[in-house]
Image: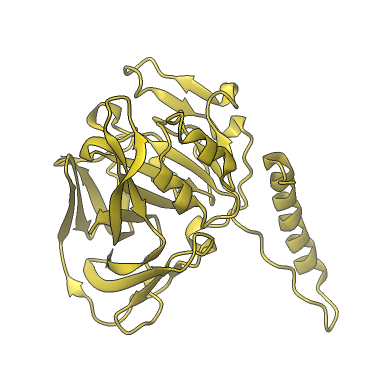
Length: 308
């Protein structure tokens, strides 16, 4: 029988306390070291069409996934663990692609506004804590500063959701370290979907890839520029799924199990890379052209799923 979010949160806190006590008291010879705590992951589906901008709390995510949705538009799946902002949003509906992406993490919580009726059984069967407003009405609220459906927000503190301080990117094996040898200097890269466009422009100050959406600088709710320390452009197969939106548009499914090519942007350079994920339960591994583990710049990682 799966454990509840409250039980896992309590276990995570206990694990942290155990580490502290072990470090303070030391250990006798031959004793095994206590395993570090796993990330307590909160994933939030975030709206990013023009009417939903600017987002709130996106800059605090450990990983930002970008995926294609119906009508050639895009949507964001933000993954939090090392820290949580007080408010996140605007929150929108889940997709089949999200379920496969989130299998990399250990029973994450998925906050979303809803889903197509045919997709709901898959969400309920997935190894995650599904958290639509119907299950946590006190954690969600509608803002009066913009029109529905672009005004639904989440207060993570109302879930409740524990934060162990573990970075979700490191938890699935991404390594923050010095860059590999080589790389090609590049100042800007653009990814286009049929009806959406993302541009990443390197800025030495503040040392980030500044994000642009549909030709417009992307900003936080406080007016600062959204920026990533590392951007991964991951080539994936995108096929129509059996799910459709209210307008009859097929919902694309981006397959993140398998292998393919990728481009990693960090510190003003572009690196050719490859990705591999053997099963849905395993994490994605990124390697250099020489087959060595790819390293990432410390800070927020954007992973853009680019249709082959």
